[in-house]
Each structure stands twice: as C-alpha cells, then as structure tokens.
Amino acid sequence: MRVGFGYDVHRLVPRRNLILGGVTIPAPFGEAGHSDGDVLIHALIDALLGSTGLGDIGTLFPDSDGKYKDISSKTLLQQVMAFLGENHWLVINADTTIVLEKPKISPFSGEIRKSLAQDLNLPVEDVSVKAKTKEGMDAAGAGKAIEAYAVVLLEKEN
Ligand code: MG
Image (cartoon, rainbow, N blue to C red; front, side, top):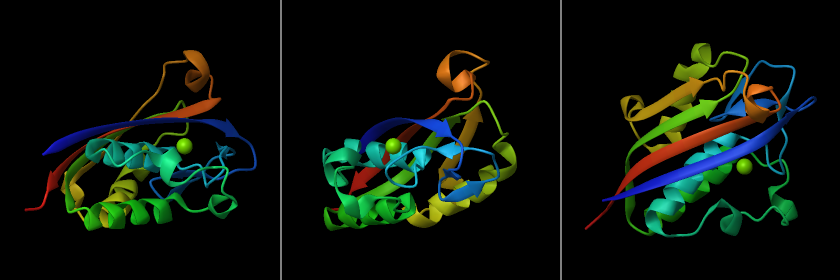
C-alpha cells in the first residue's frame, strides 16, 4: 500500500471555463492554464504519481509541449490511470479538497465525484470531493486563485 499527496493552484481569469474534476461549473471566470486548467484533476494526478514514485504531472505532460495545449485534464487522468495499470497499481480511494471563494461547489460535488470515480475505476463512495473557502484571506480568498488538495491510497497488485 502507498499513500500519495497532491496540490495545485491556478489563477482565476475571465474568458476561461471553470472546470473541476471534468465538470464545468457556471462562473464568470475560470482557471488560467496551458491545459483546460482543471486544478482538481491536476492535484489528483500528482497524488497518484507521487504515491508510486512514477514522477509528477510536469514530467509526464510538460507545458512546453504544444500537444497539451487546452487538452482536457480528464484525458490526462485517463492516461495516468493506464500508466498506473501497466505498472500494476490499483487505486483504493481518493480524498480531495477544493479551496475557492465562489461559486459554491456543493451543488456540483456529486457530479464531480461521479466523474472522478469513473476515471479512477472506483465506486463513487470511494471518492470524496470537499470544498472550503479561504475566508477572504490571500489570493484564493480574494477570488484570484483556486487551490486543490488530493490524497490517495494505492495498492500494488501481486
Ligand atoms: Mg495545474
């Protein structure tokens, strides 16, 4: 068994979609980024890769590579899951937290869980998506940034 931890932060800017776990959340701004900017999936990918010692999102999908421009992060997660499968790793569960001042994520957390569970090959009960505000503090609190944290447990197949 291995535990993995991931963190990511993106700036929030106008004229971008706010995408979390592959779900588009209605908002007048979204994550800046080379890919679609899905900060939650990026944190999750780093947790998955970190647990196994197989690198991180930047080494697998360098933002200097034009082929990842505006790519769906769900596609990246699916590629990471295939890579973990080739290396005989199974995901046991994933626990995540989004830090965002607004909009409220709770109306969408069920859909986000379902989306992530599908990509992680897990029942929805084994995927947790929580959201918190920064209570007005720092860049996330000012609505200028969004953060995500992820913890995963993996097991190596015999
Ligand atoms: Mg990122």
